[in-house]
Image 1 (cartoon, helix red, strand yellow):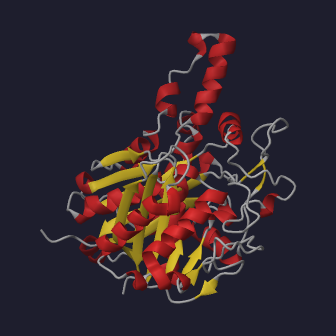
Image 2 (cartoon, one colour; image 1 turned 60 degrees about the vertical axis):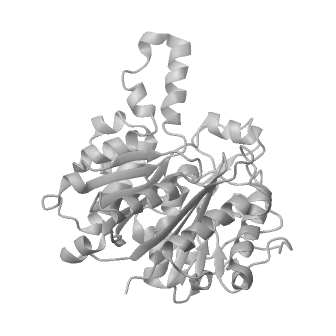
Length: 413
C-alpha cells in the first residue's frame, strides 16, 4: 500500500518566550530568553530557584471560567495551544470527517499541580474534602481527552508518556497514523506544567538542575563548557498534521512535510544516556532511513541539548557517529537555551521550530554559548540565528528511561 504524505498545516504555542506563533518565533529569531526566578512558590530552601515560566496566560481567554477550574494547568495549556493551531490551520470543522480527525499528545508528568493541592487537602482536611474532579484533572491523558471533546475529534486518540521524548514520539506516531490512512488530520505535540514544589525538589535532589540562580538568563547554556544542569520550562506546542491531498483540496497553508521518524531504547540506565550516545544514534539513523534520504541532506538539527554535562556530550557523539564528516557542515542548535526544558512538551515546541525553520529559512541560535567545550565541537549556531535555506531539518528528543526519538521535516515545494 502506498504511503500517504503528511504535512504540517497549523501550529499553536504557549511558551516561556511568547504565546502564539508570531510572538514565539519573533523571540526565537531575536534569541530572547524566557528564564527567570520562580514565582509560583517560595524557593527559599531550594538549591535551584529558576525556571522558564509561561507569562501572560489567562485561561479564560480560551475557556469558560467554570471549565477552566476543572482542568489542571497542563490541560489548559494544551487546549489553548490546540485552539491556536486549529485556527491557524483554517480547518472548517463542519466540513471534515470527524471520525478521521484525531489527537495524539505527549505529556511526561500530567497534573502535578492538582496532585499536590489535593494531597495537601487530604492531609489537612480529610478525604471528604478531596475534589471529585481530582482524578480527571490529574491523569496524564486528560489533555488529549479534553482536546478531542472540544473539537469533536473522534479518530485515533492517545497520550504518549516517554519522559522528555513524549512529544516527539507523539508527533511521529500521529505521522504514522495519517501515513497509513487511519486519519486525515491529527492534532499532535505536547503539553506540560510541572514547575511545582515537588517536581523542582525532585530534580534538585537528582542534582539535574542548574543552580546559576544569580544569572537566570545565562543558566541554560547547551554545549557550553560551563553548563551545570538544565532549567525547567512549561507550556505546550501543538501541530496540525494533515494528509497532503486533504490539505491541498481545502487550500491549506503548508509549513513543511513530515518525512521521517525513528525511535529506540538505550536499555542502559534510568537517567544516564547510553555510552557514546549509541541509542540516540540509532533513532537518528532510523529517522533517516524512514525518510529515505542520505545523512548529507540534513541542513539543521534542533538538538535535545538540555545543558547537562552528559546529554550534550553524548548527543554530540551520536550526531558525529551518524553523520561523519557532514556533522561538521550541518547546523546544530538548542532552543532550550531560550525556553528552558519543557520536559514532555519539549518535542512539541521543537517540532514547531522545525516547521518554521523550513518554511522561513531560518536557523535558530544556541544562546549563552560562551566557552568552547572540546568534547562538543560542532557548529551550535552560537548566540545569533542564521538566515539560510533549510531543505531538511531534524529534531532529537531523549528521555529518562532511555527513550530516544527523532523526526525529520522537509521543505514543502
